[in-house]
Length: 340
Image (tube, rainbow, N blue to C red):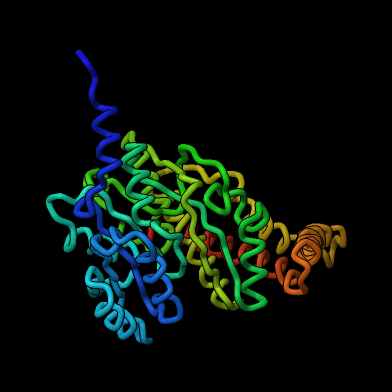
């Protein structure tokens, strides 16, 4: 008997129907980025304007909704829905519940804080069809505009900033256990219950854990990339990583997992530095721990300053330290609080 499955898959990739795909942009107060996000997603291939593009707004108080409504007169496929639960996890679940049809096979997630390459939606859907993966994840290339944002962007894509996560500036495609979400096989998304809407952060890692436990696969497609704009201020970055740390602790507790070594390094840096400062009055050698940590950050700052040929690089160590300490504080607090 001749196996025609590969030919069928190839044909489906070549004739990817726009009715098979929806794209979703979770948004909340994204007036600064939403228009360039939408325009980047619609640039190029006319096929893209046939795919439903849903902005799931979580109750924006800036001009996000007004901008989207204006763009709807230009892009007939653009739709706005209200996400009363605010979180991105709830936005994705709501769009799947309200906007998918009988023919929908793939859901593409497009975060508003980004600029996407031409044909992004089609590329992600094609990758899902080609690999038959439950999810396709992609690398993010951080970019800054202000001085602090540039420093943040430069350091976050390094092992010191992200701990070596494959989706942070990664160059190699392959199957992974977690990554930055770009697309989902709708049947798997529904089968495992979508996102856990109680997660304000780290909902992607929690979802990926259930995907892997269900025996499905996650494919990191390094040929599909997006530009991501990190937080522009110290306080915004600290809040973001504090929430990330709390979300990671919840995921670990929910699934009974042990944290990875790279995830515990910020916790050790925080506890070690605080412990060293506490014992320093009695044993000055305790200062070695916080001093050593600050020295690492200082070296990173000088390195970025020289390699990027910009004084903004001197803030890279500051940004990295904020990420580490905020993430660790959030992780520790959530670990002590319990499952919620």
